[in-house]
Length: 318
Image 1 (cartoon, one colour):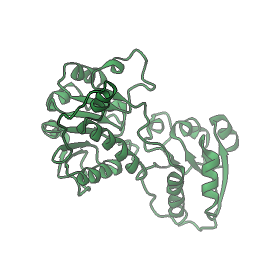
Image 2 (image 1 turned 45 degrees about the vertical axis):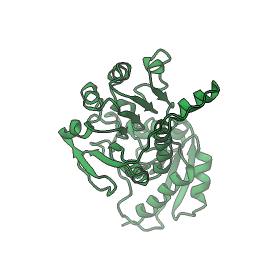
Image 3 (image 1 turned 180 degrees about the vertical axis):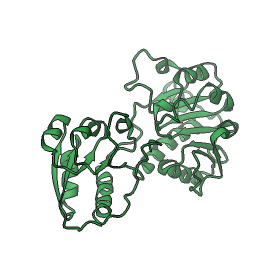
Image 4 (image 1 turned 90 degrees about the vertical axis):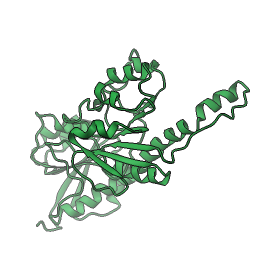
């Protein structure tokens, strides 16, 4: 176990370094000195003696092999794919930003689900043409929400779904820790998981195991009434199969925040696919006080030799 008086040098590598530096300095953490940069070249130049990094994975991935003393990296994102490239070292502790996005993701997902059930857009379109639209609407109560991935975000979504009286299924690697999920599915049970869903929310990380897991066969297993909401990673959905399913009406619609390629190319067919809502990776954003608090909490654990929160398994990718 370390002595709390041992010195550690932190490199904050982020476009928001001024905000993060201020938030961390306010806590007067023992034994910590801080350097800051927003560009990889600057970070490499000043960070040779640093043993800690806090910042954005894409930026960190460009400097990690050049900073030999790094023992721990705290990322400011949930996704860490840039740090999983085989050519980048893995001889350090990697922790990511979890348990900070659930509220905003729930706002996003259920904002769209309520829009669909309450026919908000059709009524607005009727208003524009001066038409009185008193056609029936539906409700979330009793509908079946399928969560593909039940981590901290999925668990928050499950709790919100219960608030609206929904039933909740979860498809996970093996965990069954969220009490708000009515039934869990694993492995080769994914088609059984899909069979009766009203809404599929995909919040999986981008890994080799999840690549295109939502494919043509999976779309065929979904009811025609189902909607897809993808808030996880664009790599988890086969976009060609999605376009086909939406075009031939075997899928009711899609709300898409993430894509295989971002920004989504202007010529991509999803821009003009029926019943498709594109939100340009804006479902949530980093809230610096929450992200900084993760680093602060983990630093306190780090200096007394206790396991850090939200450690990433390099093999699994999350």
